[in-house]
Length: 263
Image (cartoon, rainbow, N blue to C red; front, side, top):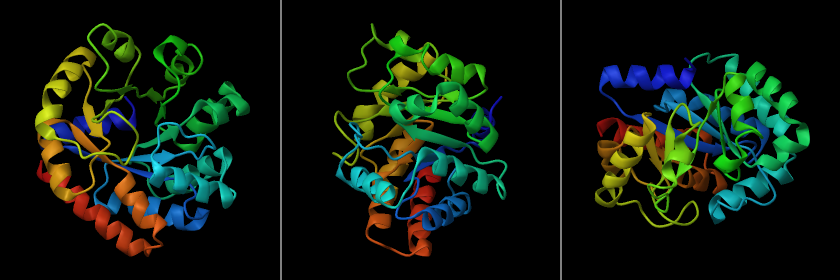
């Protein structure tokens, strides 16, 4: 059982849904990013997705691309992102942290070295958007052997023939991308998402959270009613990019959390 497994089990017994919040590590700078990360659990976040900045983020929309560029310009690296997790764990031993990003920085560091450092830092899971199931031997299987959840994305184009491969080695939860395209795109529609949630959750036997296209407490609440949780990223990252104070960012996060927890 990982922190992710424990969190979803606890929320299920409480009759609540999971609020998953995404922030880019090192955006707009290391200290501010760490302060926001440390404040997320108190604002109602159940699982933190921490972005690892990368120069070619193919799945990210303009808002998160800009966040990654700000972080890289400020000197953020994979090592500094792991250092954020280490410092976060000094005060929080319970909130799951999932690293979300691309394979290149991990490959460059070396899979074994990365996994050892990630486990030691207190990382609980990985979402690596450019590694398909056919490449599970590269990272997914070693990550699971090291005790990390490997969380896979399912999309509106994941049909019944493809779905078993997608969920085969997935653990922790499945992340359903509610709209075709990149982050920060069209709004997710709960009535359209609901049948896909049921189909994919049944195939995976895991909690299913929905992300992309969720930017308001009302949208988060609607998605939480039909899924096991909701992910909000671009709406939070946008506030950070606007230079809003940490307290203001966290207040907005708390409003989104209330929407999810009403679902």
